[in-house]
Length: 125
Image (tube, rainbow, N blue to C red; front, side, top):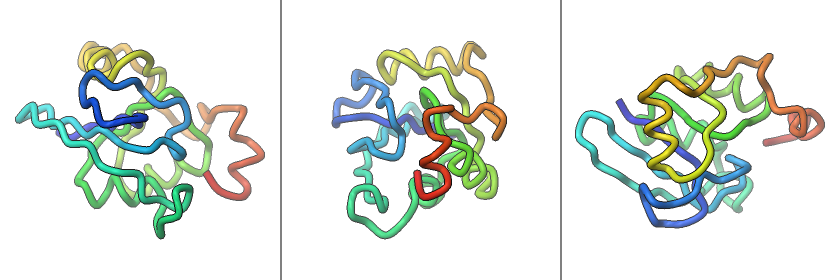
């Protein structure tokens, strides 16, 4: 199972969880079966690219996105691509992975969308 965490750098497990998943500079992907850690650049529309963050995750074979919170549109896009979303991640990637493994993160639905993303959801991430 591959999980993805939005991050601000290339420090892998020691990097901090990014606050706004669509505007982070990198995504850290952890394969829970092999313990492989991969850092990919955010090449989404937000960063001048040509795709949305959920599409990047789908191309990387991600099964689960772990983040602090995100908007309704993003949650819907992840659901459409078959990627589960868990919210409430804080600290480092290592902390977020541990919290996920222990079942301490909340599975997100559109009802859990971050309030500060309400206006932004009507336009983009």
